[in-house]
Image (cartoon, rainbow, N blue to C red; front, side, top):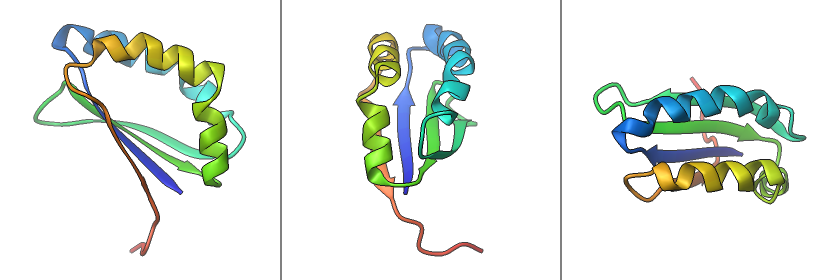
Length: 96
C-alpha cells in the first residue's frame, strides 16, 4: 500500500521541517511494515512537500499513525502548515 501526504508549510518553517525530517526518517523506516520512505519538494512551490511511503499493509500504517513517534511529530509540524494537509492511500495498478 502506498501513502502520499501533501503538506504546505509557512515559508519560514521550511528549513525546520527539513531538519526535523532528517532526524526522524530512519525511525519511520525502522517501523515494522515500512518498506520505503521518500520526501519530495515541489520544484515550483518550495513550501509544498510530499511524503511517499510504501507499507506492507494498512494495519502497519495504522500502527505507525497511532505511535508516539507519529503523534509527537504531527503535533510539532501541524502549526507550521499554511494549508490543511492532504493524504491519499493508493494501490499500485501498474509499473513500467
